[in-house]
Length: 221
Length: 306
Image (tube, rainbow over all chains, first blue to last red):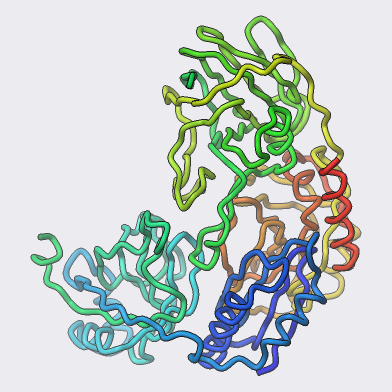
């Protein structure tokens, strides 16, 4: 895949592999992110990987768009999934009662039973495609098509921290209580944001995630 | 080592603890945060001989009053044109003064600007997160916003040999009506007339203004067709246009990614000036090439080092 390079203001370069998202594109972004982090070109200050592109911040006193573009080109092509093995995380979540207020709506919209939605969600393997929106909001790609629902027409206020929410192919575990317009299908107690400088966030971009159901009694224990 | 203690006796909204910013965590959804006006913040610290990113307080137009409970130290206030009441004295921001126990320091909005910065000759003791005291206002992570009745300590305090002085206000810390931008990265989604409007028509800052960004009022910026782009990285200074055609300039506490196209991005050396433009005042954007933008950033860096 040959990317398009787009200068952004005086201090960033956007490297874009496609305009539509797909797993292949996202894995290429992740591979370039890792290659860049290892290569640490002169003047690069930070890399932000997203779904189809990544943004490289740089210090304009030390380098410029052209020099950084050349540095990126020297790393291409990148081979997805080769630079570092992704970790797999198994996350406990409760799909019951008040913790899953939108589960019935999802089941109805998909023509399935509640149990079938839960089974499908648990059988799926997700991978972290990017972080965004708020601290620790890991976008996990991999909601199976049969249980995909669009986002709601408006956001619901005060969706509790730990809520597991889905929209389209994406799933997120909320790290803060805040508004959300996605379907809430359960809740987890996992701490994604940790006050640990060595590993401040539980997941790395590219990591794999699976979910395991726990009962309400276990969740509340 | 000696220390000083302060109590907050009056505080407006959006008065928060900041430092030089939190770097390296955008990949986890955490942005740099830090001062809205980096030039004002740096000037306050520099005047005291501090590293320019040392922890201090960002004060909004809502103002701040502190009572010194114990100890004595020299402080600096820079950024915007605020009014400082130091004991019996009434002066402007861009000042160095010394405070001691039982005295109060009152900072309130003045003739110009949205933000001013209070730096201490000493180490302000605050909560930190991921190596930085900078407050992310939406989550509260970092040092946090100051609230009425809060108390804090400053350790290793110093009273400078020149306990009062004034600080020169650099050009790039003043509000300017002309702000340089670089088009893109998604200008291709806008109709050519809107690209013209962005550069030729004045826009007004609205009161929808917080640390995340400010909405502008002006010509509607039309997309060629309705589209939703995959969520992608945003930067401080991105001019994002939502489906309603209204542009928002994203600032220090911006979200890390978003799915609205960005018609242009402010040149980094002009963002500090932009943050001091008040709501209802207008701004004229001027498009420059990325190469010119790099030149402007380097020029500013050279001037700042003098």
